[in-house]
Length: 241
Ligand SMILES: Nc1ncnc2c1ncn2[C@@H]1O[C@H](COP(=O)(O)OP(=O)(O)OP(=O)(O)O)[C@@H](O)[C@H]1O
Image (tube, rainbow, N blue to C red; front, side, top):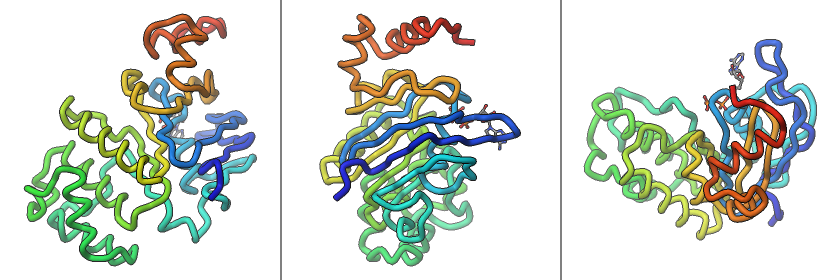
């Protein structure tokens, strides 16, 4: 087993002619929950797209589970949930997941497990288009859990969810990590940081910090991650807008 599930070195990505990631390096420890935190537009999704091999990169390297990002062998080992729910609206929850289970070669019984894991058992027979936005997001998460991936890349999985669901999902992430899964979870809500073992704080395509929440608070002499983030920005001499 490799120590770091993800190794990013000197990654440069241009989007719309602009260097969105101007040469970043970071790693994600195997079996950890790593939070990728930063304001809207700072490059979180772009980095995640590079990790799952969905982003054209200009230079640098991204290795995932010991292989180059996007390698065919990683397809069933990496689960990715984008911000836009990627499930078929005209199928029921169960039908859509059955379809993905076949594509991934996951045993049929796993569909029931993942539906239960995301708290949608009651809606298994409901058409996806009749679900709320938060419920649809959870169907996407259930699809990503099929095949029991070793790495889960989750782009703002709790956005728009109520506090109870957010708590339940973080509990699920914790259970997955304890079972050996590595999770890279993005959020622009700093209070989700306390749920992560490691934090990558990002701003304008660069990392301000790669540390645990406790280390961050100590080095910045602050009481919460949002204040720590602001302190780091000030140290850099930059305003937030
Ligand atoms: N398809 C695209 N073409 C050109 N530029 C893009 C494209 N998608 C994103 N960008 C730019 O890349 C930058 C980083 O975007 P990205 O989606 O990675 O940010 P983010 O941190 O994930 O934001 P959010 O939290 O709002 O999702 C932004 O400035 C954005 O305008």
